[in-house]
Every structure is written in C-alpha cells, then in structure tokens.
Image (tube, rainbow, N blue to C red; front, side, top):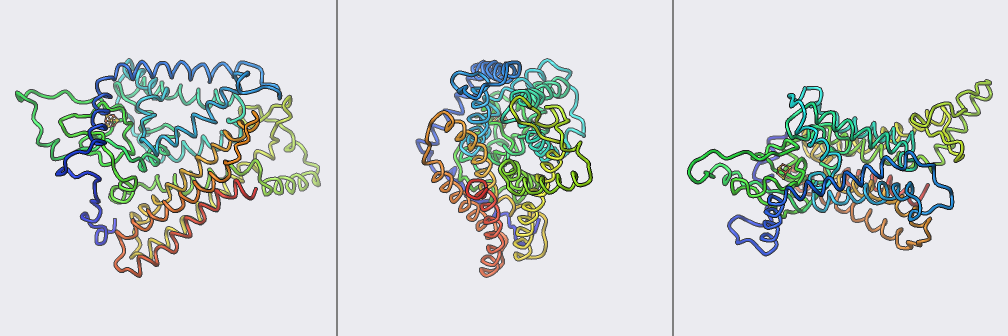
Length: 482
Ligand code: SF4
C-alpha cells in the first residue's frame, strides 16, 4: 500500500450514524431485525430445508424428462418452468439481492450452503487443508464454471444444469463432511460464485457493524465465560469491517453488545475499507472475470465475429480435406449435442468458442488493466495496492452488466410467452448509465484518497473514465450492436 498517501484518517470514512447520535427509527428497526434473526435460527433452518426440497425437485426432475416441445410454455412444462426459475429469476435476482441486502441469500436461503453446513455438523471435522485456502479459487472456480456452462449450454438444457448445480452441491456436501465442524468451508473458499457475491455485497447499504471498543470492553455479568458464536463461513467477527465475507445469517447480532445490523453508505466499504486489504484475486475477478469473460460468454452466441472466424476456419479445414473437426463428435456433457433439437457444436465450434471467450477476457481485461495502471501511475509511484483499490471502482458496472446479461434470458423467455416488455430497452439503458456514473463516482472518491494535488486527482480521472467507458461499451454491445 502507498503508506504516504493512503492515510488512516482519510480511509476511516464516515458512518451514517455516529455512536454519539441517538439511533433513528431506521436504526432501531434494523437492530430489531438483527434480534429477530438471532431468536429465529430454528425457523431459518426449517426454511432452508424447504428451499433444499424445491431446489432438488427443479434440478433433478427436468433432467430425466424429455426435452420440451417447441409449443410448450413455462406454465405447462416443468423443464421450462425450472429453466425460468433458475436462470430467469433465481440467478439474476440473487445477484441483485447482494447489492441490496448483502449476502443474506447465502446465510438465510442458499440450499448448497445449508447442505454443506448440515454435512459438516455430522462429518469428520478435519482441519481445512492449505490447498482449499488457495487465494486463486474465487477466480478459477468462477471462470471454469462460466466457460464450461457455455460449452454445454447450461441455461438451456436440464442435464448440464444437473451436472453443474448438482455437481457443485455434491462437492459442497463432501467438503462440508470432511472439513470443519458445523462450518461452511465450501462457501468460504471454493464456491464458484462466492467471490462474485463478496464483491457485490460490498455495495450493500446494510451490514453487521462491529464496535471494537464495545467488544473489548464487554464483560459477561458475573464474569463467566461467554460461549462463542458459530459463524459458519468462518468470518473473524471481532475484526469484521465490511460485508464481503459475512453471510448475514444474524447469529452474531447483539453479541457482546458489539454487533449490530446497521445501515451504511453503499460506497463506504469500497472507498474506505478495501484499500487497506488489497486482494489481487478480486481485481482478477472484476476486470477479467465479471467484465472480460462474462461479456464474451453473453456475446458469443449472437456474435458475427464468432461466425466469421468459424467459417474461415471451416473453409481452411475443408480445403485440406480435414472434415472430422466439423462433426459434433463430443457428448452433451462436453459440448452441446442435441441433434433432435437441431442444436450441436462441432469440435471446431468448441475450439472457436473457447478462443472467443479467451480473446474477450484478454482484450477487455487487458484494456481495463491498462487504464487502471495509468490511473495508478498518475497518482504517484507505482503501487499494486492502489491499483487493486482503483479496480474496485468498477464493481457497479461489472455487477450491472452481469445482471443485465442474465436478465436478458428472463426477458427472452417472457417475450416467448407473449409479454411485450416494451420498457426493457429503456430500463437497460438507464441501469447501465447509472452503473457507469456510480463507478465513476467511486473512482473519483478513491483517487481523492491518494492524490497529492487537485490536478493529479483530475488527471487520474481520465484513464478511470476511459475504463468505465470500455466496460460500459462492452456491455452495451450485447444489447445494441450484436
Ligand atoms: S459474521 Fe455474524 S452475521 Fe455474518 S455470517 Fe458470521 S455469524 Fe453470520
């Protein structure tokens, strides 16, 4: 970290409510919600089992049913209904919930987390090995799942959904059974979307705030020892300064009179906390994963570049009498292969698809990294910590793009059911514009922490605005160019 310019005083930031101020009605209401969560853990667990049952039904049953006819509807066909629930509602709106209420989905409803914790309660309780704690997992797991999901068309077919979601759930249970005691080791280290959720939760206006002074000063009446809280995702609660790792389960609410469900500025964690805890894997995830790779994953299916490269490669092969790569030889669990649906990828398609995703990741991620590096350098001597801090400013545009990309499936499915959804285009434009403005504002605030002069602050904004423009334009081409 650039210790000279990133001062603790500037980084400390502001709270919406000062401890010296009397709590407002909203603060009191949030405190009561926190208390409700503590008191109703049994009910929450019962709710989680209901979600597990619905999840199992929607993941497993469609995989053994015949594929829907072209005349089938969401409301009359379980496979289409499950597809709509998983990819049209669940996935985009879980992402949105992260920005609104933090990782409450993880702590209160997620079936995978609940199953992993239940397995851990009855499992071997082994210590978590080093390979699980490898810091690169959030990016590798997200990228691997995204690429494989495109290769097998997970949004469209139920068997790949069973392989990816069911496989992930099975792995979560095995990891839970082996490691930790009543913990969510899988969620903390290995879940393919945990890193993404952690990034989005930084924008949430709610979090569990820890008052460290109250924590230290607290004594149990009578001096007896206090029993610790079981924080399943292994958050060091006394040290928690943000909502990124917290699953909002509420178990620690009120603990030692120091933990409170509270509101905060949605910018606070990114501007005032992440700078002192730089995580390169988060930069990889934002710049190369959530923007570079995700843009390619949403683009390729309708991309004229994809078709051009494929055709040119096919002609090159045919000219040399090499035709086997043009056949759909791989099974459905490696590449899309549904001849009865007239939907199959040849080996060449698969290679071009992977190349397209790789190119999108490298080109867009590289352009964004270049802009962030330039901004870092304008603000002083090179500092990797400052670079990673500036990268966090792109979280709103990354989150908005992924939400819009996923919700495009919602729109497509609802239009196929006869809903016009005329306002979808205007809403998309409004959301993208707002997300770009938010990212720009975060960039401005972060740069202010490091700028020595007003002119260097303004100069740093040029590459930062360019980065926001590159990210925004990459997402915009999904709806208005391809
Ligand atoms: S920090 Fe508290 S609210 Fe967050 S996951 Fe741990 S126990 Fe639950």
